[in-house]
Image 1 (cartoon, helix red, strand yellow):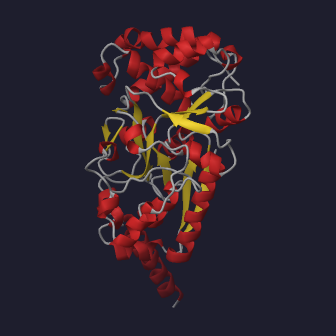
Image 2: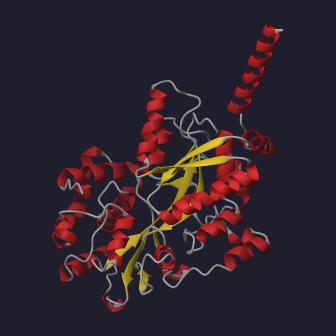
Length: 406
């Protein structure tokens, strides 16, 4: 009897492992059933209280409706999650990995895809809520920093570079309208602008914005950069920074750690212009009493960078079914509308709202996007993100030239 019980237990374990390995998002009822009781370890940036609170709400909804426990593993750099999966693969840990879901895009996605560290391809397009995703007017949903996503990551928010100022201290007529005008503005207003130190994502985004405006041939940015060409092609960026840095906050001897730190300097009156990758960021901060209600947004008429941010599942995730359920819930009209509310977060939706039911459209139509949020027609043109190889080389060169450690 003991031998029979052992054999049956082994068979049950074998079937369970096989079903987990063969999770197919096209068979959604089976995915939901497999997810029940799983714990999903979601590695996501943890530097913002309102975003952390939103992820906490997602966890509550998943637990109540799907029996999935969500654990937010808070990161200060997504590259740390990538490194953890790399280490597991090197150690031969191809199952039951420590990470089930990663908030990711850009160079980190490109790195994981190149190294075979992602679950897929094709799972994102099989999620039930994918039918509502706006793939027609938002091309960055299927191409991440020029790299095809191939359904290996699921979108959950849109981003566009927008600048902020306090209208109580700064006249709108004096605001810069390009990188060159920003440089001239800093010379006239020394110490009143800065950017987070790379490799912080927002700081690196500023560098890419400047390069996109200053490079002689912007089309070069859409292709992998060649090491032998980098110095010449990127020289306009570093010449710009050499001229800019003496006029920055603390004369560029220190930099804000991240966006929240930079935003606090605006709130404290130490900076007059800041920026973020969310058009509703200022309205959200006002709603949460983090910025005065006199802060307003502006952008460059020539265009600013735009992209989509995603969630991805490592190839060796222990809770793939739970991760799929989480990704699908993040695409639900309920979750997307809540995320776009500036009182909660203000992150723009990836959904095509006109495809939704009347009830779900009403969720979005009822949103007050806030006094500091630019309307879609005021956001200006969109500039494409450079190929991920550019960012790696820019950050390396920045560190070599300036090497500031806060």
